[in-house]
Length: 572
Ligand code: C2O
Picture (spheres, rainbow, N blue to C red):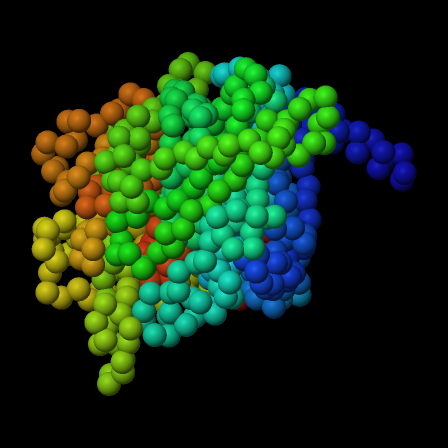
């Protein structure tokens, strides 16, 4: 018996070597812990007593196995943001979309293979606002022996932006949903959990990037903030962008980058040739066209510091050096944002091709933006007027999460009463989307999905509306990367705009900003069976219904079918 076991184990090991991929395993204990920030201490939900949470590291092709044990008092689910989850939708994570939440005291093992991706992604809680503190990086290295398409950096450092409330974030969102008003804005932004020297009591909580002269560092930048797109710049140090959302791009060098919640950006930073007589601030501050007071407009700082190699433990070279600050764009500098996003291009080489669908099977035109719900009869609300509540909708449908998981209903063929398959492909009645708002801003509720056949080439134009003010909406699609083939301001023109599409080397990503008072066109191939969430990655807008889901049916071949659910899939 023992001999048979040994033989079996050896077979497994051998086949793993042959495939040059391996299994990486993690345990995530989700529990509350106390953290002190901004002059006060607060209890947060976190993973393994770490904030931000642990880094999940894998190579392209690896099987990742994460056992999540929920020791907190909230329902939990974890999403592996940007991981394609080919045929493994059960491991995607959005609560009530691909799984029921993991209840307190329960556990669930997420298992997925990282296929065809390399760069930086991230994981986060995908239920209510718990991702405020439940998040961490995913680092995907190229396959063993495969180099980066750029000179290998001396060191790689994750740099994660977050957003901090002094109050309990679950209380913040539940109060907002009760009153119908906007939630209280955050008190600080953070870099790797640290607010930095521009906030009270926070000088000791400052992220420091220690560098050596001449060395090149790769920063794996992630925006995990709940509600804010961020500008980022480091004084005196240009950044060369080489990868976004775990896809290589044609390198571009910038002073300042913009990153929306959900996006990742790998940049190379080369330290100056000698010890400069200064230390350097890195700053991140929001980009927003929303009304002031509706978002946190503070600035987080970290410090880039040159270290003396002869005494590597010395914190900083000379405390009395001048501190240089970068200049960030104006808070509402929409033209900066569109110029920047226009410059991003896929590598589109033989090794890293851009497989842009050239023909389209299904076309969709979605309006995205805010609207209202009526306040309850005789109630007083704190929405845009005191008889309305804030809501948000795609094609006028404000998405309502079901009480059971959509993927399971789809898989078992029991969608009756859970969802309908009639999500509108175009707005019910066209209007001037970016012009004077209509009189009636009410949106309708629904759990409506779009059904796609396996392999459909999809083109989706997302049109921002100015019904309650024009804002940028960073839209994230689960289960796929898409190509950003066009963008523009004003109303999309179906006659002239498609002629300007880039179908050669458009950037490929999983989250894209729908421009404020503008539109963006994306294309993707529906080659991943399952149920896939799509939503604005500003959490407040998700709470208001700015979300929908796609069903992709199985294909005819065995490898085109959704795998069966794991036996420990949580129950509602
Ligand atoms: Cu990063 Cu559905 O989320």
